[in-house]
Image (cartoon, rainbow, N blue to C red; front, side, top):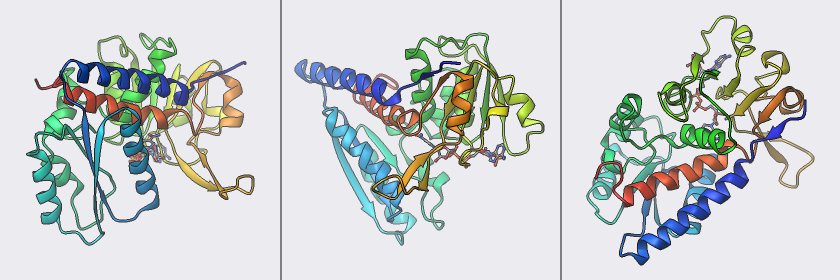
Length: 295
Ligand code: NAP
């Protein structure tokens, strides 16, 4: 089957242009330049890269951004003091705390300490709850980016069987809820699978839209995919390669080479879901600056 690539790099570029045009227009009309603050704890290579991409994307879209760095030994109190300061700074519209955090710091407590009005990652229980009920909320960036990628490629979700593999609070679970909402990007029949799912292959083979958010490189093989399915690969894995200058390359949760020929659409890794995640964060920050969610 001739498959089409769901080109997140290209679509995110279009969205970034739309966002920067909106920012220019808002400012010309006396509105506010969006301002995103990011907190990074420690020196984890992947986290450094993600935050650097987010900050760069902010600059490209005409946002203000600030990066607050702490070393691995930072106390919860120090971190909470900084979050409190940002929560009370009227110039800052959105705050993200890059995860994971060191073990001595409770991610749950940190997330709950962020003002929901500035929680542009959409991880706070207030935003997760409002999203679940279909109320205005900051929708977490990866699920939002996936829905946008589906929508902008004209892929219908209504009445389709969507199988999501992975039930994390940042990807699989919110995505499963969003796909089942009674709205334009929902109306799907959703099956949410995880490590205790029995007969996973039987279930995934019935998916019209299969979303892999497992965190295991090359987990999805061709025998798990229906002919003509849409396959969305959320996984990101750095694997060694002697074919690149850097000595490594990015791979996903799906065995792309063998799965792609069975698909109608498939996301590449890199260049699929990743760039869509970053522009969704920008979208949320723009909404925060415009006070569109909470007034
Ligand atoms: P996570 O928190 O580790 O969750 C993984 C999920 O996969 C869990 O629900 C787990 O089930 C399930 N799982 C693990 N092994 C399984 C198996 N053998 N069969 C069925 N289900 C299995 O991961 P995450 O944060 O959602 O991230 C998933 C992947 O996406 C990672 O590679 C991550 O790097 C990537 N990611 C990419 C982006 C992006 O922008 N592209 C954003 C976020 C994450 P249990 O719940 O039962 O343990």
